[in-house]
Image (cartoon, rainbow, N blue to C red; front, side, top):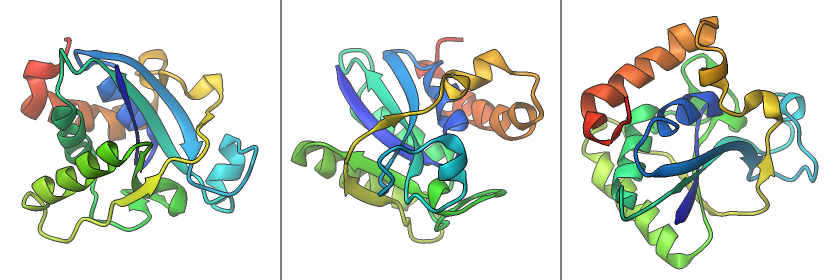
Length: 174
């Protein structure tokens, strides 16, 4: 099993797609990359903690290659906007990848290089060593599955799921 910690704006969006991805065994929403030793949703949303909203995606490389997980990441958010994803603005929504090993750092850098051709502007995704990962509150775990009728899910997440189905249907469970 391999785990990548990725930030692509609101963690609910990445969580919704990766939860439906074959070979993914766990998706945990959380916070990392900042200085606050005990962040919570409200402090992270304030933009004062330095933390990003992220997901820890654990997957089986015998079922899904790491490159597919990373290419999906770049398809699911705009990695060319600094500290912004749609209506979500602030450093907590930055495009970010947090590595634990040199191998992961290289995979992340290769993914940026590979995906740059798909974007008209430079990718600004931050690649940093993973400090402590803080698990988000239970309310945020598997949010889309629990609240598919919620407005944010309908307007923001459903189009991302549709995009994932369009480009990655072979890797999705249903």
